[in-house]
Image (cartoon, rainbow over all chains, first blue to last red; front, side):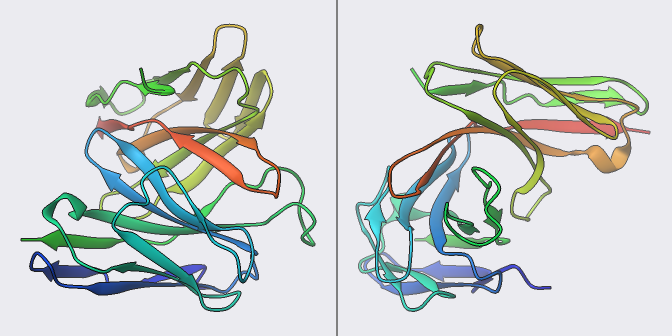
Length: 119
Length: 114
């Protein structure tokens, strides 16, 4: 039972390079999210996708783009990496109201993160 | 001022102690309150989930919400070394379109020593 899977687990980039972080969930959830976690800051929402084909900005979207490829997959792209984007990135998913099995405001299921360092 | 405040610790206790972890918040619109446990180099995992005020118990864990004081707590009884982790509080309100807007505390690092 994989849940939420993120790749890669670690990555080192140089300033200005680009890369895509991959996320896939096998729980048939409609909603998916990208967070970043920095010391003393908690988790902050970058982008979310309430359903396939839709994406919306969160608290800290600048410097990032996302693609909801299908119901399972939600990718995060850094077009021109900056040292300020050094962080741990987490993908999450949750059941949306109206989905089968929705019992309330279902909390989110997280992957194990991608540790990204930008030099 | 942050919407959710949480003491980062670290908190160090002996095995068997009762642990109290706390968060305060400023937005009275929050309806759902969660506690996540995060082991080193892992993603957060849901520990407790409550809606509105009151207590909820699950084994050694008790979550308490006081909406009038905007204060939530997590109590761990008979703490074990395996409870050593970072504990994140989170709270949310459901926006139109089904978006679950979660705001997290910064996390409290707990160490339980044998």
